[in-house]
View (cartoon, rainbow, N blue to C red):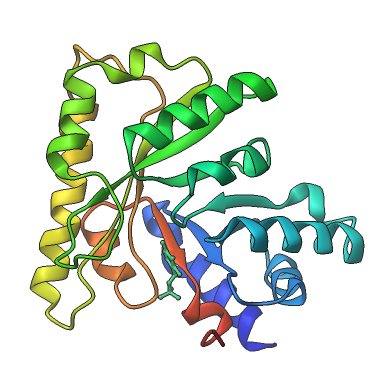
Length: 231
Ligand SMILES: *Cc1c(COP(=O)(O)O)cnc(C)c1O
């Protein structure tokens, strides 16, 4: 077995007891790598750039037409507002909605395209300046102000976040705990009565076991499946 299929089989086995789902992050890896992972049973793939997602999914349609309709794409990168129109209707989930402004543009573009877009709100808790996301305060205010009520074609399915990139596992754990508790605060607020708000996306190659312990149900793993990326 190749490394890719080996890793997929192993990860599915390790995730099974928790019921968490796996997003195989295929960014910077070719369509053939996606096909290999697919053959090992993987259906959910993640990309972080609009052009790459569109090009790769087209390539898969050409090279492997029988598998293309069975693949679900998650968008996991910073989405520029001027690129929203290009990916509406092409993803199963946009995990990285990092501002209310972006959320509203996704909504209006979804109305225009006649589709409903499923999204996660990305929160920023990591100890790094450069990471995108809503602050915990913005996230909670959005819900307490009932900002979701005016959305017409967006379904908010949960939260996505990243932990600080550090070897200090207690910091990583506390970041994940913060993300999970933000999710729980919204989910358990019966006055909000949100339906289908059930997804907690956290955990990558280096920290997913901790994320699972802290309540993740969707992990996004690239390097541990496909190997290092050549930027
Ligand atoms: C690239 C990326 C991942 C996967 O990272 P690995 O360390 O390669 O597993 C997960 N989430 C996001 C948002 C990413 O951009």
